[in-house]
View 1 (tube, helix red, strand yellow):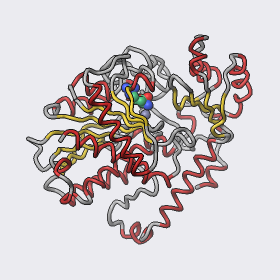
View 2: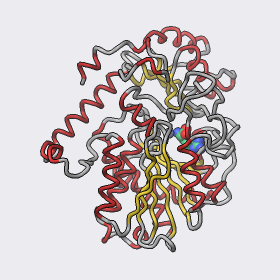
View 3: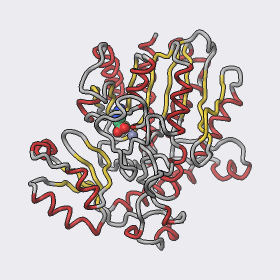
Amino acid sequence: MLLAMASATNSSLAFQGNEYLNGIPERFDETQLWRVHNMSDAMLQSIPVGQVLEEKFGGNIWKENSKFLDVSIGKEHVKAARSFLQAHRLDAEVLSDNVQSLIDQELLEGIQATQAQPGARSKKASRSGSGMHWKDYHDLETIYAFMREIRAKYPNICRLYTIGQTAEKRDLKVLRISENPREFKKVWIDGGIHAREWISPATVTFILYQLMHNWENQPAHIRGLTWYIMPVMNPDGYEYSRTTNRLWRKNRSASRRTNCFGVDLNRNFDIGWTGFGSSKDPCSDVYRGSAAASELETKAVSDFLAKRKYNLEAYLTYHSYGQMVVYPWAYKAVKVKDSSVLQRVASTAVDRIAQKTGSSYTAAVTHEVLGIAGGGSDDWSRAALGVKYVYTIELRDRGTYGFVLPPKFIKDTALEGWTVAETVAQSIG
Ligand code: ARG
Ligand code: ZN
């Protein structure tokens, strides 16, 4: 596997989003990951740094906020991109000088951890069980097998829905857990809206495990809720990020006008859709799509939830990275009326995380810490459905590995994600 990847074609031949590669993974040899500081100075000079680095220097934006910009720059563009920044007196800190080595390390560590699993071999041979664990990231099939396994174990309280299909004909799956679906208040949890944020589906499956492995002994505030859990909202993108481009963000639907692929599902929901923070260019990583809810994934989730908005008390969506718990609004620079309640619950979750794992997370309003962006699922759940506890959780880390979080951090990070869900459940009461 590693050998095959080492002899694969050079990334400069790869045209982002196109099918040039024929299943050969895109490589990022000596691609650097930079953190550009003083983004507020750039704003003052009104230079769209991110956009320039993206369009002129083939950069891939990992994260952008009012303070800094994380962007990866291919080897061949490093020099010119650096001069561009210098010309505007902006400096870039090198977070990594070889993104490919981060990716290789992630893969290798995962393989080793999986082989070290007790009973790893026999389990595979006998094909019993999903083989789910949290020492490595898993493909879609394993995640779906895990969901089926839970349903089979607790048939009385579980229901497994296929709420739609993707452009590439993969199922969109949601598991409901409830002892009383008609009466209990509801919590929705999703992950994997963005393909490359692998820690998100890992965390959401872990939440499922935390709930179920000890269901009978869960406190009333957990057992007394209806849980809707969708570990992978963007299965096509997720699989594409596993097989072809580790840094893929969007889904994989074809655009009519260009030969670029993919819509940013978190810019495609029907709230502030034409506003800031998204692009109408199908080749952009934050392409909002041809219309609000144009995408099969967005449509399936929106329709499913709209039918179940009665008693829907919480909408939790897991992303990475940045270590934050944020709440609406994102599409406009306004706080929701009950923001003090949302801030208090988020702060409690953040305090508990610090006690449990020692990680520091930030509780804040989205637009203040991540900038304004329309079309998000979080804002939509509040605006369209009136959900009270709406949170986007940006999991680990703060930029050392970014999306390529080594598997050894999965467990603790997932525990942090679970802590937020637990705290919200307790607040619903
Ligand atoms: N990193 C997430 C994104 O860019 C943040 C989501 C925050 N919410 C939002 N509606 N922008 O999609
Ligand atoms: Zn995301």
